Length: 109
Image (cartoon, rainbow, N blue to C red; front, side, top):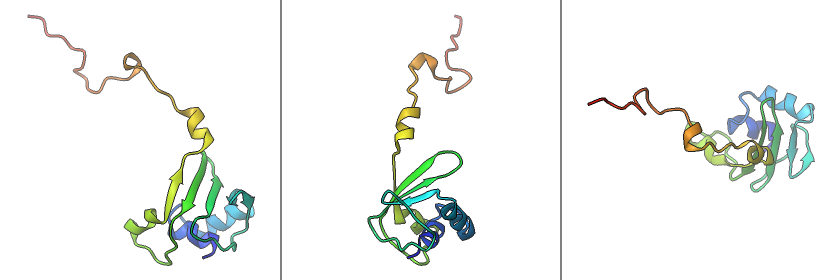
């Protein structure tokens, strides 16, 4: 299956033309190499995209020409990127925002 079609049918990228543009701009790699939109992907390939907000890294699990909404997410497995690791913040209990407006409220007897 062509890379641009996979990105569209798996719903990683909304439209095939956007997938083409991302490939032409050098923002898509397969197995560590920059590729064009016509690159033939196969099960097991690792796809990396450098999109506006943060990089996306997925492993292709299956190729389905016309998946339904529920089947699209099963076509790939999202992998954690190094940026995800460095940006993770663990807040202590005292730093977390309250879960409700009444938490911490003590009634006076």
